[in-house]
Amino acid sequence: MQPLPWHQKLRAVLLLSGALLLGKWLHHSYSVQGMLHPPRLEVGLQDVQQARALLGDVQTLNLRSAVDGVLLQAWYVPPRNGVVVVLVHGGGANRMQFLPEAAAMVRLGMGVLLYDARASGGSGGALQTWGDLERADLRSVIDALSHRPGVVPGRIGVFGFSIGATTAALEAAQDPRVGAVALQAVWPSLEAELRSKAGWPTAIGFPWLLHDFQRAGIRVEQIRPLDAVARLAPRPLLVIAGEADEDTPAEVSRTVFEAAGMPRAFWSWPGVAHQADRGPQASVHARQLADFFLTHLLS
Image (tube, rainbow, N blue to C red):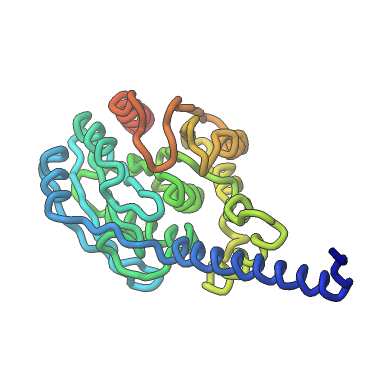
């Protein structure tokens, strides 16, 4: 068999390269759509019944973000000891994500506020901004919470997971009303997280992903939990990492922990993955988290 002429080889290489780039672009476009506009996980009647069974007297609040008026739907349980913890869920979830943790806090006399982030659950908005606008939403939630009867100034805690952890870190750094912070599955920066999610080859995927986020109006360069936690001291910080978390590896969250001042603590939970079952020690983990806030906010 005669070898192909050089120009036919070149054509074949170009066609194959074009097909690979097209496939990469189609996969990228689909992924970005899910990252910026995640499918909504609605809060249904059974969810409401479960919340009431675990939390007792649940009040429904309809709050508004001060940044653009987006509706934020929330559940609130008043405190018996002046301590209230705001729980901020991760991307693609809703206020149900950390209901067991909220229940552990309520059993210890603390109040809780769980809300659907923008573009999630029953809240308004169509764009998930990965902490950029969400930090202002959290500020509006704390504004409303600060005026509720029974909430003692300085006894507000915030727990955030994944995108919610970024949100919590960014807002707490500039809001002295937050007395204690816990972050689970937190990245040092949105840029670092996008690099990890860009896929192969990163040299092609990351610029595309960065461009799409910036085109959506997200200020990627300003979303840096690593810098935010450095401004928290002397308020206590807890960083939690799941040892089985492939989305946010434990060493990534430890980098954020190392940037913080004292007091600080790092918990590594065996068998815990990202947005999955918390493992066989789920109830223990929930109680440990509740104890952290009770210890630091009631003293």
